Image (cartoon, rainbow, N blue to C red):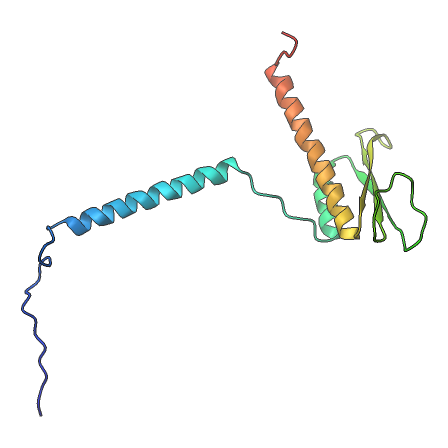
Length: 156
């Protein structure tokens, strides 16, 4: 039997032309660069809030609106078929429309705080529009509260 022996004349150490420790420097620079990129991504994600998930169905709308309207809310959906008369304030559309009218209640039983109407070509779209409408109200209320707490005088 014959054996094949593969041998190299190099006995270890850096290849010719490289300085000892150069690989360590490159690894250190790579780690520093990845740290900077990771930090930039972290800062970006902290400053830009995530988009809220879309409401997928009536159960999702029920849950979200329950959080956004702690004293209660009510919604009525009307689906208009082809050729059905729609209210004058309905947006122009080439497809049948869905109207969703919703009301938000106050702490006082039966007292309505706001009544709104949204339109969409689908029921899911109307539910999403209702949720987005209420989320916009909540955001505006938070902004107003922030300015009221800071006592910012616009007339100074």
